Image (cartoon, rainbow, N blue to C red; front, side, top):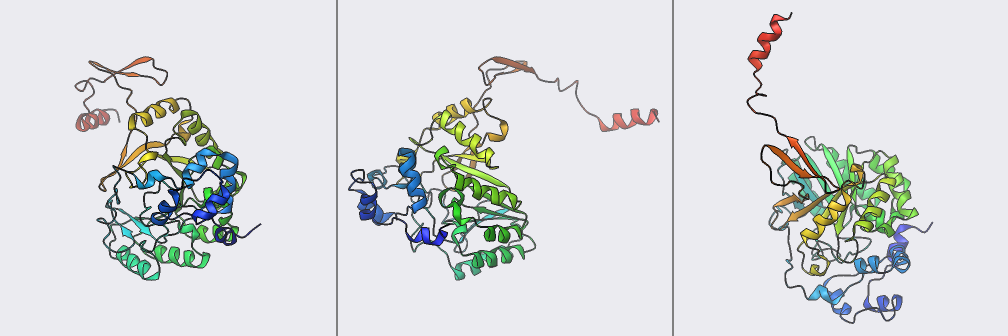
Length: 366
């Protein structure tokens, strides 16, 4: 098997290489796009694109629309404002995001952090890690840390081992999570050695990222199986993308396939308001309609939470479809089949619970 670092070193990173791989299919504007938002397509994912076509091509290949986005925001989730020290984003009271690398195996064109990923502006390296580690030590209210970037699993085994050991040595940190698209975009990176390292730091969770059934390859299956066999719970954070997976049938195949790989569908994200990604966005009504088609037709294990990561750093908001209809004395709603159903609400007066009365009654029976 070819070593993952060798594959990564052979990635397409220039407009000229892109044109050679996809003759006649590349927008000339892609050259200008790449100067602003870097390109990387490794040989493994290139083969998937060539086999699967448009749904994977659109995720990886630059387009002119990235430079013509009338609504996008450079930092839609206000990560810069919520960063007390380089590399740390502290949005929620008990959780923190720790950005430990700026590199990915594939530079997705819809990336929330495309302003930084693959560029020198991404905070990373030993100095950044030291500052972030001090922040986590000095804020014991943080119980959970999510390693992200970039893709933390692209770090060398030894450096990743050191990072995890340092985090696990902080008494107040209970949970470590890793966000990684590597099981999808470069699955041969998930070696037996890597899994032995990760296994030492439980409780440790990995949220990976698949967007289309064509990404569920034998190689991806092996990567997920190795991680699951190491006792690591796996979740998937899919992004709803126009022209790629905005179809109940496609998502149904994807979500069922993830369960077969022992990956729990976790979130289906509405695309962020990131500059250069407006052409990927669906409407929220479209997303809710898709969810209505999935709920009841798929196992509950396969149903993700459809969510919007609210602009301005306001956090994740569930976008669950509404089944309720106008109610009077009954709670009325539609089933997933569209049937009108009802559920009688309890009478608050009849169901009032009095601990004192219950204790008196109980004492008379013993």
